[in-house]
Image 1 (cartoon, rainbow, N blue to C red):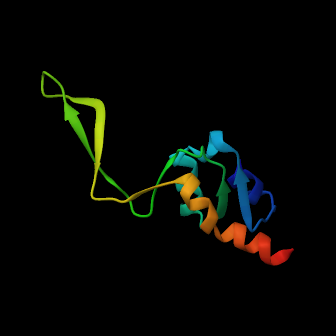
Image 2: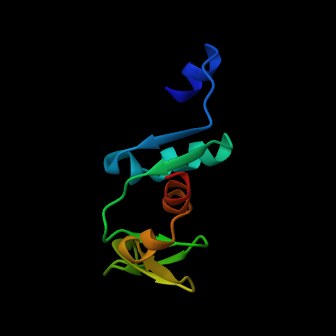
Length: 96
């Protein structure tokens, strides 16, 4: 949808989306690839990684990966702990 709007001449500096789309890795990746700044709502207990985490899946009885996993070598931050240091929040404070 954003690509279609840009193709029709609509320009924007940033986009914002709600928590349903904020959880979409694909959408955030598309914004990154398009070098489009974005602001996404996410649940306050959502895990945030500053670097791409490595994931290790638990193997089942037949040696196939299950849906259970653990994150290796990345520091996780919770969204609620990160919101006080948001650049957007700082910009809003400065503009008032």
